[in-house]
Amino acid sequence: MSSANHYILTWQCPDTTGVLAQVAQNLFEHGAFITETSQYSDPYTETFFSRIAFDDRHMTVGSEEFAQGIEKLAAPLNLQYRLREKNNVPNVVIAVSKDDHCLVSLLTKWKAGALPVNIVAVVSNHIECKSLVDWHGIDYHYLPMTPGKKHEQEAAMMAIFEQYHGDLLILARYMQILSDDMCTKLRGKAINIHHSFLPSFKGARPYHQAHTRGVKVIGATAHYVTADLDEGPIIVQEVKPINHTYTIEQMVHAGHDLEATALSHAVKMHAEQRVCLNKDKTVILI
Image (cartoon, rainbow, N blue to C red; front, side, top):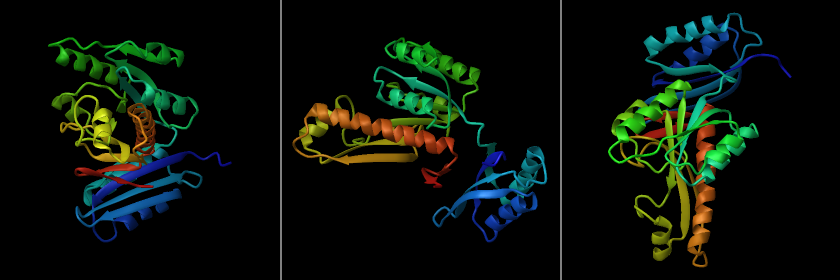
């Protein structure tokens, strides 16, 4: 196995002739050894998206000088980019309420090394999940929601996010609506999960509503958080066909499995810098 350091460069810019060639030439001139590449040109937004994984086995400059070379390209190409060493995984703060199925999935995959993140803290407006989080050796912050104190509770959550140098907030069935101000601060840095019955079955007991209507498919959607409730840019959707034999309880259990799968998959793709915001939707660079 190579002892080289591995890096990920994800970028986007207005589409024009030669943008990929200019970035690739810059990597070539500095000796970057490309190991993986994916790109997409959106004809509607006229934006070019690319993700390049590379290592430094033949690099002729240090990482700082290499980063400076990419920065020089940024202005003339109007380039938005993220460059990091692959092992420098994002710090994650998880927010949860009472249901723990998404939290369990995230913790299990993280513990097994299947989720390239560093879970640094969990915040909750309930105490139910504390023992589980304590068992994993992660700090648990109980932030009860007191009527009329939403601003103070969110300020405490943001303070924890900043204290742990958070890069991503995961709403793992966190049953509180974030304020518009918090959504703006966390644009592209917060992922939520919900059942895919929205907007058809809003409010409480959506699976009961769906059962009454005899739905034939259930699912889950993981998306970035925006001020438009449950309408942020979609990252992952999971679905499962069902039929009339499913009880409400079976629908709920199947839905929970899909929620956990979709959320974990979305977090993994975000952590690997495979997701780019493209106005109100996303581009997934596989």
